[in-house]
Structures are given as C-alpha cells and as structure tokens.
Length: 518
Image 1 (cartoon, helix red, strand yellow):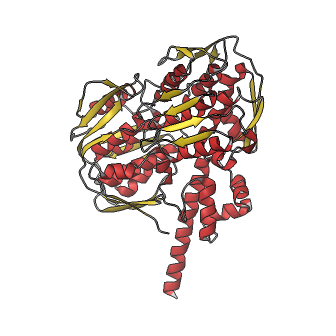
Image 2 (cartoon, helix red, strand yellow):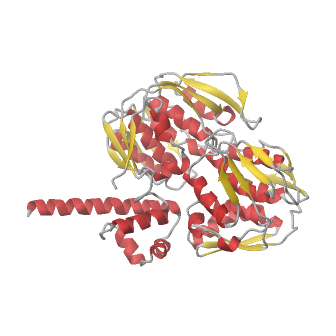
C-alpha cells in the first residue's frame, strides 16, 4: 500500500509538471485556455484541469497539444529531437561560423510577397519559424523550393494570391505573420490573417503597426483569432510617419508598405537594427530607393509594380554570435567565432570588457550582402567580475534585448553581484531563475529584474525547457559548464530559432546527445 501511495504521488507530481509545461507553452503562444480548447475540440474547464495536473493525458492528447502549441511537447513519429542530454564540464576548442540571421530571413520571406519576379535568398536559416512561414506561403499559392544543401531558397509569387486558403494552423504558430500586413495590403483590398492571441492581445499587438500602416490606407480590426484587414489602394502618407515605438517588426511593416507606394515616405523613430538593415538592402535590390539606412529616419521612394529577379544573402546573426561567445565564457574555453556582425555586437563586447573579458579581433571584411561588416573573434579564458552598473537593453545601437539573457549565465560565472533589467518583456526574467536548479544564485526582484551572485559551482540537473527561446539557450549553456549529466526536456523552442545548435556545439567538443522518450 505504501508503495502504491508513493507511485500515486509521483504520478501526480509528473502530471503537475506536464501541466505547468503546457500552461507556459500556451502563454508563450499567446493562446487563451478557451482558444486552446477549441484547437483540441474540448472544453476550457478540461484545459484548466490539464494545466493544474488534475487530468490524465493519453499520448494522443499530448501529441495534439504539442501540435496546437507548436511546442514539441510530444512528437510521435517525427524525426526531430525532443530532449537533450548534456555531459557537462567539457572545454570547447576550435572555430565555428555564425549562421545567417533568423530575424532577417523571416522578414525577407514576408518581403518576397512584394516581388512578382523570382526571389532567391542565400543561406536561409532552416529553422522551425522559417518552416511555418513557408507553409503559409505555399498555402496561398507561392512556389518555394530549397535549391541545395547550402539552404538557398527560391520563391516565386503568383499574380493572384489565394488568401482564402491560408494555412491558419501554421499562421498561428508564427509570430511573424503580422509582417504580412505591409506587403498584402498592396495585393488585396480585403483579407484576413490568423493570429495566436486573444482579442485584447490582438488589439494591443496590432496598434503600433497601425500607426505605421494607417497612412497607407490600411484599417485592421482584431477579432477572435484573426485580423480583418481593409486596404485603400493608392493611399499614401501626407506627412512623416512617426512610429510610437521603435520596434523592429513595426519598422519592417512600414518599409514594406512604403516599398510599393510611388511617392516619398518618411519614417521617423525607425529601428536601425540588423534585420531592418537587411530588409532595406533587399528592397534596394527590388528597385526601391531608401535613404538613411542605419539611422532612425528613413526616406523611402517606392515602386508601384515590382518585377525583379533578385538574388540576396542576408547577413549573419548577432544573437547567435552572442550565444557562442557566452558558451566559450561559461565553459572557460578559447574558441574562434567567425563571421560576427561587429556593428551589432560592439556594446555587448564593451560590457564584457568592463567585466574582464579578453579576446582578439580579426580585420573587418564584408558579408555576402556586400554591406554588413564582419569580424572573427577569438575568446580567451578570463576571470570576470560583476559590472558596477546594471545591465539593461536599449534600442540599437544599444545592447540588444535578445542578447540580455546571455548575460545572466555570464554573470553567474563572474565574481560579485550583477543586476539585469529586462524592461521590455513582461515575464522573461522569471525563466532565468531556472539557473538556480543548476547551482546558480539568481534572485527575482520583480518580473523585469534579477540579481545574480557569482561565481557559480555548476552541477547537473534535469529541467524542462523554458518556452522562451533565449532563456532556453541560456539553460543549455549553463549545462555545458555543469559537472555531471544534465537533461533539458522539450527543446522544440530552441529549434525554432537555432539551426543544429547541439551538433555544432559538439563539433567544438561539447557532449550533447539528442533523444526521445517515445
């Protein structure tokens, strides 16, 4: 009887753990309990019981939940890995190339809708976010095909798009779908776009974009589960567009709307971030004239009819570069990270230098787009100390918001106390406390701020992957430094933003094994 009670208690704890994972993945996807219930053909009360660990789940139900949330909770019959087993405490060595930017690749896929010629994008990040967008594009009649093992991608957009057949499931699993608004308003006077959030969330999400798109004659109403868009062809701004927030996707939507408006569009408070610059360079290849690239004021001279056969290579990803540098720091390793877009890493490197990090820089050279400046960085084993001031992000050219989480695992290796302030995201700082399960001392001050005391004596543990991409990678990097064996479960979110990360780290000497329970 005692054994039966112990087993029952263990089953309950496991159900609660799975329920917490499902809840976090649902929140990260922007779905309400009611919307997830609709996807599963069940009731909201059933979803509530599942998230509280009060309901037994079949493998079929788990697979449906994983599909609805695009989280890889269970992936029966799929080839991708579900979990990572990490043998920590190893030293890395060798050289590794930074892959092309995920965020730039996603923006360029959306921008390809502007072009009625053939678009070829070089070395596109072959990640799950890109796969979802390709499913959406294919569903509306766009022809896409991978050309070779270098991940070159060909895109051919038809004269007429079949927007009524849009793959709603794939669209809801990508947050990038909102960047279809800018190009599609030139193709249809009335269309719908599915999105993952509830009605209130949808209104909040779309409003900054409407500041940019309303002057071009676009009106959008966020209803339950989709955006209803109505466009007035030929409309254009009569005065400069002043963005109420310097957002990357908002700026990209404004650029894509301006690209096919024949007059001049002035965009103020524009983001000059790396993915926006790549989009500008691509639009220039389509014949659009843009002044002020890399600044917060853009002057765009559009072209009404774009029919160009273009070949473009997006630049490398500064967030991945930061990931790899952080991996070297926490494992006390000397490696060479090649093809780092230095313009978008200078503040991060300056902060690291203040903490005692030493490294060598190569001479600069140009990326394949002939615009972005690259360097190779060779890291040295360094004794780090906590910075005097807090570390916080700022719009470019400040420290990138997506690079901030990596300073959590770096600060955990440094001597002293570091404060991180993530003022942008409401709850992402909470996930950094998962480092405590690996031996760190991370104290949550509020949903935006954490205190980190170092140095850390890392130890292995088994964790469920946070539903947020960058904190998930931070946990993986800490596991590389931790003695013994660690397990990171349900790593689909990492695959959404990184291509073959585990295998590439293994090439440097890490020992990461991918496995599935089923």
